Image (spheres, helix red, strand yellow):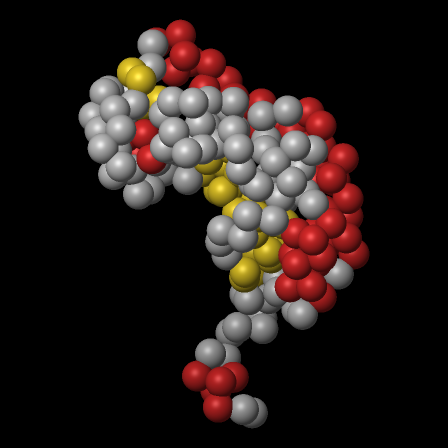
Length: 180
């Protein structure tokens, strides 16, 4: 047995998380790549990147933080989950990852006041507290908050329809959900 396997004897053992069965415990966590196309979903370049990780043996690969509502990151190269046009590219990716006996996760996200006018016309937040750039976000109305909540639900439904296996909700580091 190699030194690494002696130190981590369970790494290549199967793992069950609720109903989800993974072939091993090697997970590629979601991390920012900016390889989406910002329009229709998963670009060929990003798909190839993720499929290569599944082909390398990862039990599950994660798609980076993906916007769930039009009020966040309008000019980005992220996989947008706020439109139905994302479903075919996500489904193709899920099929390719599943063919390699791996699972696919995605991170549902809204930038909140961390968005800057470099990326959106205005950042939104529960209250008008300046962001790191000193920009004051527009305070959300109750109606807008409920619309964003529905955006999370619609994004999750799109992911399920595309065949993804796992959803993560980004609530840390003062993004929108962490601002309440």
